[in-house]
Image: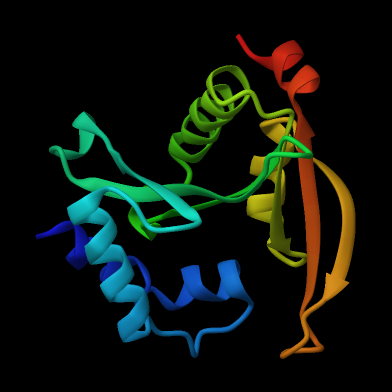
Length: 165
């Protein structure tokens, strides 16, 4: 299966969509697919830097992706996002990937803070982010789905440096 095939498969997982976005009626737009194809081909999408996660234990198959975007260079911070295929949940892949991305962002890119948003009911993801050192720094209601509340979580480089092995 091609990278785009995996990407589309991950976005067809109803439970993952529900936990990630608070709803299951989500599909990939043709623009999102075209952007991903272009990024795979050119290794770049303006505003998004995506790393497809591969694991030799899974026969060299992609298991998910992790991204950073919205880099605010003047504040030295960025947003991150991660999605794993449902078959790979609970295997510490997310924690390892987030740790690697944070190390890259803080020690190679020179950023000071990373943040993310997570559906407030997604306790599994919240626990993962807390294990990685993130703390809740705010919350807000979704503009399109008022029944959905998001938590904003962030980690500062100094905290990451203290908890990193």
